[in-house]
Image (cartoon, rainbow, N blue to C red; front, top):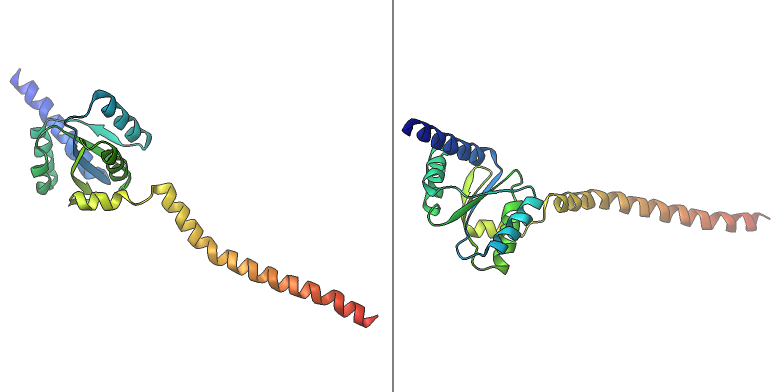
Length: 173
C-alpha cells in the first residue's frame, strides 16, 4: 500500500517538474483569504488566456522545483499556494497582476519565466506588456509604417503630375 502511495506522489512530482520546465511561464501566488467566487472568477480569466492554474502540496512543489533546478523558488512555496503554468511568457503575469490589483488578498510570490527564476518586480514589469496579439499588432504597424509613407509619397507625386498634365494640354492648344 505504501509503495502505491509513494509511486503516485512521485508521479505528481514528476508532472509538476515537467510543467515547470516545459512552460514559458510559471507563476506562484498565495490565495489565502479569497472567497470561492473570487477564485472562480480568477480561474475563469486564466482559462480564457489558456493558462493552467493548479493547487499542489507545497512539499511536492518544492521537490519538483529542486529536481528542475529552480532551488530559489522553493522559498516561495510556503502557505496556501497556487501555480499558474502557460506557454505564453507574459499572460500569467498580466492576468494575475491585474487580478491582484482588484483583490489585495492575492499575493504574487515568484515565477519562472523562460527558464529563469524571477521576483515580484519582474512579474509586475511583465504584466504591463500587451498580450501576444497586441504585440503582433504593434509589430505589424511598425512594419507597415514605411510602406504607408512610401505609398503616400508616390500618390503625392502622381497627383502633382496629374495636375500638371491638363495645364500643359491647355497651353498646347
